[in-house]
Length: 139
Image 1 (cartoon, one colour):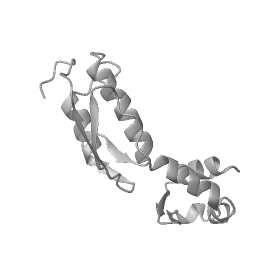
Image 2 (image 1 turned 90 degrees about the vertical axis):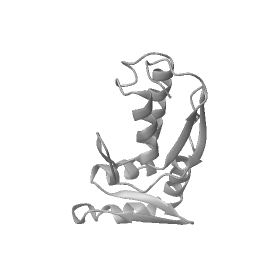
Image 3 (image 1 turned 120 degrees about the vertical axis):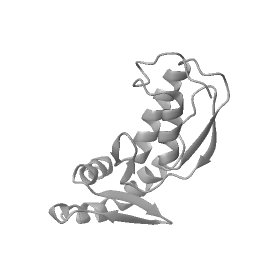
Image 4 (image 1 turned 180 degrees about the vertical axis):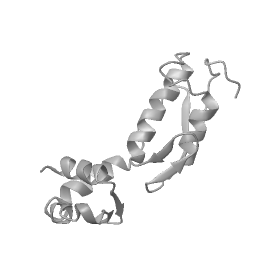
C-alpha cells in the first residue's frame, strides 16, 4: 500500500487521521485495526499528505480567506450530513462557490451564495465575498 491508499482505506473504514504537532492522531474502527501497522509503516509519507491537506486551497476569484481553522472530522453540518474529509469538502465547496459567483448555479449544486459560505463556516473556514454575486443572491 502507498501512503495515499492507507489514508483512503482509513477513511473508507470510517476512521480519520489528523496531525497533532509531529504526531499522527487516528481513530479507526475495530474492524480496521489491521491498518495500524500500515500507519506505522508509512508514517513519514502520511505526515506529508496530512500537512498538504492542512494548507488552504486557492481561493476563487472574488473570495478572500479570513480564517483557516479546519475542524477535525467527522463534522455534522446542516443540510448535508457528515463531513469525513474536511480538505476535500472545502475544495469542492470552493469550486461550487466559484461557479455561483460566475452565475453557474447548476455547477454550484444549486446552493445559494449564503449557503455555500455557511457550509465553509461550519467546518471552520471563514471567507469574504469581495465582488457582487451573480447567482441571484444578495450579500
